[in-house]
Amino acid sequence: MTSPHRIAVAGRKGGVGKTTISCGLASILAHQGKRVLIVDLDPQSNVAFTLGVKLNVPGTAHLLMGKTPKGEQVDNNIVVYPGGAELESQDVQNLTRGLLAERISNLNNCDVIIFDCPPGNKHLEQMALMAASSALIILDSHPISLLGAVRVEKQLKAAREKGINIAPRHAVILSKINQSRKLDKSFPQMMPKYFPDTPCMMVHQDAGLFNAMAEQTPIMDYAPKGRGVENLKIVAKWIIDG
Ligand SMILES: Nc1ncnc2c1ncn2[C@@H]1O[C@H](COP(=O)(O)OP(=O)(O)OP(=O)(O)O)[C@@H](O)[C@H]1O
Ligand SMILES: [Mg+2]
Image 1: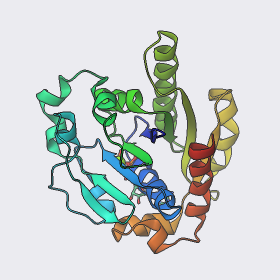
Image 2 (image 1 turned 90 degrees about the vertical axis):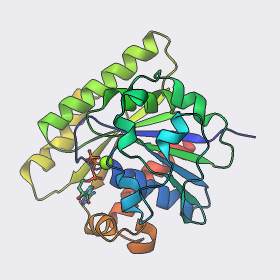
Image 3 (image 1 turned 45 degrees about the vertical axis):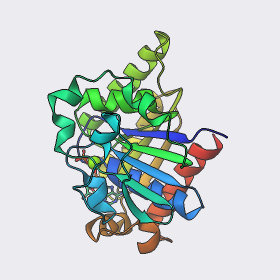
């Protein structure tokens, strides 16, 4: 049996679109027949909210503590392990960074596992990167977010050089791009300068993605033909086909 694709959706800065991309990819891949598990590493538990399921059920913190939570079923092909405030506890922060990789190695009833990382929490982000087979580094067209993305990539590369077991491949996603904004127009051209040897994909600002989150509905049930889905299908293909 092949092991699941494991995707860490990371990026230091808050609000750049990590959860939108995690949930969007889950919806697209589920629609393509893949069984998807989303492991929410965010104490805010935004994945459960976004996909319209209960926030307060055993989820990621239970998984980390060695249990096998049932999670919340979104539709036939998506299960969510909600995040939650327990992820901020000292108990979780004291866990070794490789533990998430260990905990998910027993999960055999899914084809894809998506880790939605929280903003700013380097420890939880590192756990996800160490459990992942691919990492997506998300940034928007803000210089602070570029700085955060460069840092994540630097750490990934440094860890690989040290022989640490960490996501062996990664891509950068320029998120929430609005071509009518001056900065957003110039940003894509800057990517090769900051990420010369890294695949770079784009997710445009899209009303479908925004409203699907606000209305707590998976994007493929909300705006399956929108530009956001079109963009995310390219990312999904990169994940599955390499
Ligand atoms: N491509 C997009 N088009 C339109 N709106 C978007 C897009 N991506 C994200 N948004 C909106 O931007 C806001 C932040 O998005 P999201 O919650 O996905 O970011 P995040 O990086 O997960 O945030 P946090 O760091 O707090 O976890 C939300 O209101 C979301 O609907
Ligand atoms: Mg989020």
